[in-house]
Length: 280
Image 1 (cartoon, rainbow, N blue to C red):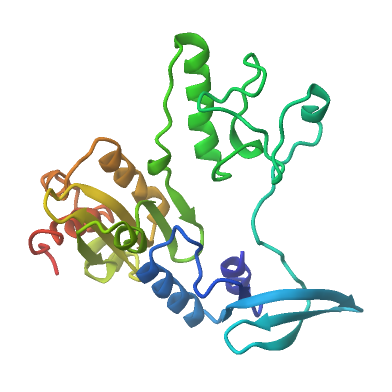
Image 2: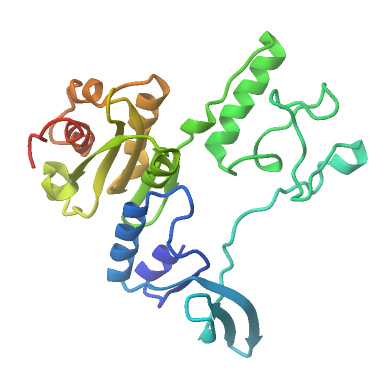
């Protein structure tokens, strides 16, 4: 939303509690690049900022926050304050408590691995239960729940749920990021390709960003794909396909990608994990 309002001409300041933007799923390198691009657009960022108060006084909202780095209390004035700290399950009108369904401390309906509530004939998916509150994740759960009902088995690969940040440039990712791989002690290779070297991006005069592959150091199996740039949300689907079927970066590099398209950057980044990209 900050990116949208900034492009519409508003002065935007982001107060982020974490020491980086994008949340835990975003790759650290991509997070830094995203902040750089958005800062260039005029958005101001205060990281490590814990908002403690927001009061409307006339036409102004007075905001107080703790700077966790400095240990100081800061303030700023704004016309509008948008609180975007996450989502809560929306159970209103469902009658969950009336039915006697178990609800945890975070307001989520408790289910088992087959989406069953405490009553086997009542299944629950999506935003009112566990996991990321994403429409496409809920859609997959709905399909799996129907499969459980009809066939007795179903499956959702929660390690392969893509995420998209609809800023400009867009950011999208699927699979693991570098932080997670390092923490798990997994040896990996990185392959990157910038959109500045992509013919379609140059033709469209939209060249910010890059495609980044993380692949197993020995097998080249794709572990994660991270994209910042034009149409990142569209391009990430190919990454999900690669992860779902255990593709290697060589598998992807052997697929002919049409020219000139943004998807060529996907192939080039895959090439970069074990060889040299064609156009960079």
